[in-house]
Length: 165
Image (cartoon, rainbow, N blue to C red; front, side, top):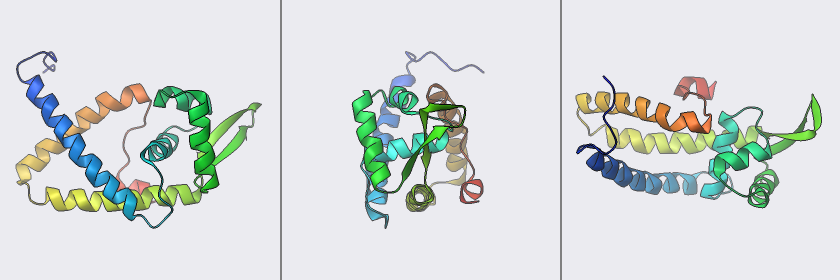
């Protein structure tokens, strides 16, 4: 079954519902970010960490395109993350003029801890939902993830076990 057009009578309520949900999740996300033991990073810096984690071989130009940000802003974000010990810039073996962005072990630990706190909050909230609603949500979120992640060139989500391995 193909999805209906976005201007269908059902879409506006779904879009409004998703918008409301995102606002609530932003509150949960910020609470999780503020409670991580490592030095706090801004929301913009956290987005950079997530994008670098999901896009191997990423450079400053590609990161700027994904963020929709100007090169000086991207450079400053990366400078701060490198100073915090979460990011490294490495020359590419095949082109020493190009710098590749990589997370450090500390950057990966930060994301792991952040995810663990956020997932705990979501698990607690979802435990109050009926099982059928949780199953429907999981299916819908998988399709929504594919629709959003494609343009960002993000890899499919990893299972929690694969992320911690």
